[in-house]
Length: 291
Image (cartoon, rainbow, N blue to C red):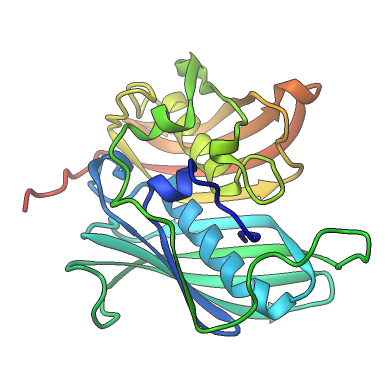
């Protein structure tokens, strides 16, 4: 969840054009505009970008429930039943469980048309689930993240991403066939702890799985023949130094689809394992119809 002053002026969340609304103490809605740069083979917003959206909405909902304590994302799951196609896509998050050490948030993923400022509407295309570790506030620690008041709105600016997605986050292909990609840890992709943002790590896992399954033609062009439908991410340690390097293991493969496990390592921190992603890819894709 953003702390005061987060995200900075030059940041992926701003370039994505995300808007966050907090209507109550335990709910939040994060919305971004559709652009070709965030779309996968089926024309819908790719799962890794939806992970960024779900993570942000979940944090915005959780911060009010946990205040003044902090939290960190431990597990994140995005499941898609249909392409996230529309002029906008949003994650509607709600806290469903608050325990002593963990908090669980569920988020419906919806897509719709129009300017996105009218009635809620939208078509449900999937869902996300986020489990967060509760970090008790300390007297000698930083202040609580974000503003606990509601209702509130945060608009990070921009009309949506206008440059290739992998390019803006600095993804570089090391060895595509094995899903080996590299991404620097720079302020542009930082979370409020100064480490790689969790949704961006999920995106790197998605791209690595597509490459390993033969479902992508490289991060620069991003014209994959397959679409990620299930993305399960376990965060084991913060990626603080970088570059973050991926290693993929294919579990099943058929015609550009299948399943893969991707592990992300912080090469600058003695190769520490930071993240493990389980990725399901559906073969083929349907291009977005022209308006």
